[in-house]
Image 1 (tube, rainbow, N blue to C red):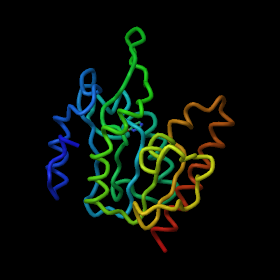
Image 2: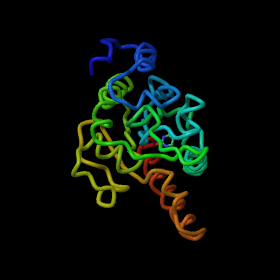
Image 3: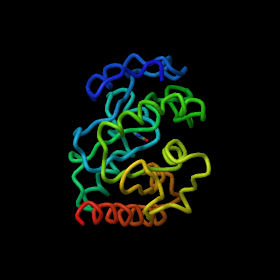
Image 4: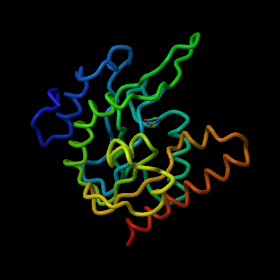
Length: 202
Ligand code: URA
């Protein structure tokens, strides 16, 4: 909270976030990966935290999970460039395994420390539809009782936006045990995005 400036400028917010030291994750990470998209976006999507690629590039959802997201958005007829895309946590948390950096799930204290940034993004963008991608973002925004299995695909009761929906994190598609399961996850993800598209159209 102490690092969040009093501003109505998304650009000023993003610049301030680059220097955030509000939790230990800034240490090993390359850079802050802040949300991206139009200030007037009608759709905001919130993922978990940047991955290896995002940490290096400084942009959200540009790695393998981002490719799944892009493909599904295209099939659902949603232009990613019209959406504001961000994460619950804005620094990559990882464990080193040899030369590779492996995703490490952020702790509740780290998610909580980062939440003031997300709240400000929501306050400034004021999306009509807020789409939560996965359980970490769901718990961050809706509380620890949030269960993705219970809330998926249906509008969620919340005053965060006129319409709040939740679906899987696209990385879950990549973790499916085999090709068939992966394809089933993909189809279900597209179904959820189509429900979002219907909201935006209607
Ligand atoms: N996973 C996320 O949650 N966010 C990203 O930006 C990339 C992968």
